[in-house]
Length: 345
Image (cartoon, rainbow, N blue to C red; front, side, top):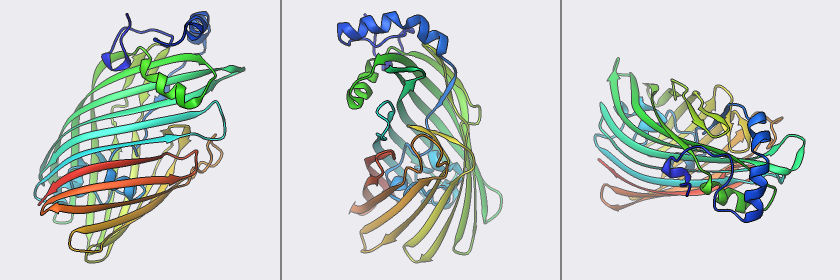
């Protein structure tokens, strides 16, 4: 009996555990599916980090806690002396096109010191797209990656630091065809796709610079740009480039902006995002944040995909902080929520 995608079972080209009608349908389309398959890219940048997503994803120059191991490894050098993070977030995009949708999730446990970080995070992206010249068929694709990494940071001067997260990535890739149906049901059924698992080495690199109240950062994720073989062809973990700036306006108040420097594979098409966000300390234990994000590739299937995020943090016990965020807006945008807990001092 075939396993689920998390089990890393042998390749197959149809959905498992579906109705008899869908199983028969998938069997008929095996040959056609293989014929039209091609390498595709998956997993964008804004998958992980409740605090970051509460600022709309404007975080490359802000990263000053253990989530820096993901957003900008160099940020550890200019952050807290000790940081421990547990975090989970999820989102879904459902544009007007009934044959296109996507969902994603990310979870992490990470630990950071100014010169060293350790992290594990799991990212999942599932996409639903149309099959050319066939209105009755949709393609489901899922890539799950488990990243286990060690982050090393070096201060070049008092104002510039560089960092790298060296990581082992276990990727589980799966693709299948199904008859067109309710999009939510199809995205849920994507977890029944039988996938192939493989292990690859990769790295993320970051730099951050400060001068006065201004910070600037640059992150390159997935430097190796690995392919993970799955049924129907490889799924690529694309190299991502992102720059950001952050400005402290007053004690406990900052604004930030991030810019994708290249096209990024998103849940419902390619995107090149601009994100702007702000964070403010309102009370001794309370932080509020907000932000928005828009896709500058307006000619993509989902268009501009504007979304607005709101979030907050509350210090429950001294250095223990609880985070939450919600992302709202365009149905074609990644709308969702996240929760996390941090220990910082």
